[in-house]
Length: 373
Image (cartoon, helix red, strand yellow):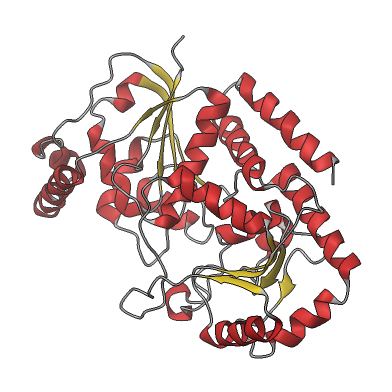
């Protein structure tokens, strides 16, 4: 039997490590709904069509005329049947032009909504965001620009928090071995990193960190490409389930000029609690974060630059009861509140759709994880 839901994924044309999060969300969506999925390819053809559209949009001043003048990308798809829901997922707003690879999605889908996992107010390409004007609802993984995107698109727009695959990240037991003392990946403080290197050498413990070169014009990013997003998420979950401490900070913590004081919740927080690690770092200073992570020690505060981190870890390690309580509570709250299932349920509720039968099955598995902690 055909599924009545159609996803659009960027996984064949966007392979940066950070985008694996969106593909995990899609995989979970498919697992509980049986959704079909289209994976556009041929990025050069999509980019050529996008540039042509951008020029036509600027020349005519009309998105409608520009769409009519711009030929669709090579190997675009024409749907041959109807769907209840069309649900593309994007990691950023610059991926939106891939919508042109499905020529008749609006005519053949009763409902249409999308999820953009990360979009910042200083990165709003209006000529692309206008393409969302035919959607029934737009979901955003960051909160601060919801109103701006609603204004640009003229469509209902709401914040849909990030999450993780708790079934993948949760440890088998709270007492399983955690040979990694500290896991510190992605953006990092060089001050804290050097102190952790010294502490690991002194104590002969396992400190896990990225060795990929810093990138970007300001050398503040640590990113790379992946061959298989599922394999990467499995590897990340395996690392975190075996880490005592996981450093997690608010989004772009090392780039305050970029965020301009707009604190957002990075995916690290959802991944860390699901794995039962003790999270240490600088949490977002927002009411939204306090609402989502409202239990004691959800994040143990650690200044971004912490030359004294060895002393901080020593003090924490002297209180094993506190750490075990932290692990148990983190896993329990992740299973009850922050699995991708709960985000999918929100999408269905907002759009007035009947829940898929697979949702209840996953909910029962999550309940068993929460109960065993």
